[in-house]
Length: 152
Image 1 (spheres, rainbow, N blue to C red):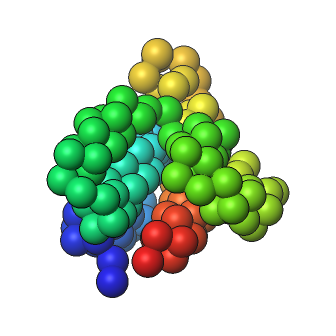
Image 2 (spheres, rainbow, N blue to C red):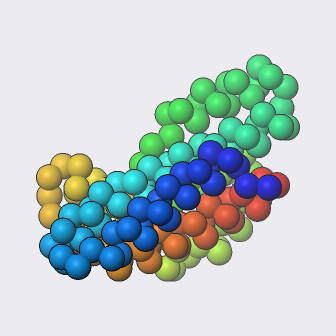
């Protein structure tokens, strides 16, 4: 069963992607693509935290789960390497599996989302297009689903 926080976040993103795709002005659509990139990065960060927090709440006693949830609040910059480091803290096997499955396009998409978000946040050019962020978002969903599957 999917985490309700992730489902809601994804629904909001899906709705926004649908609205932006119909914008006929490509320059305006490009501005929206940058905003979507920031939101997709937030989706990754929030989803990873939510999955592992929910996992610890179900598997550990309250004090341990509180400790884990508190530590997860410090998780930022959801590059694939950082996600793998966090996964490794829960299970070496999970991290190895996730690394193998995400190598290539999925890893590149996640890392590109975060790199573009950093550029956008610091006022640098990102060159992100609507089509590209939509592709990255679909790959980010796949990564989140893989993590969820490991924790179920």
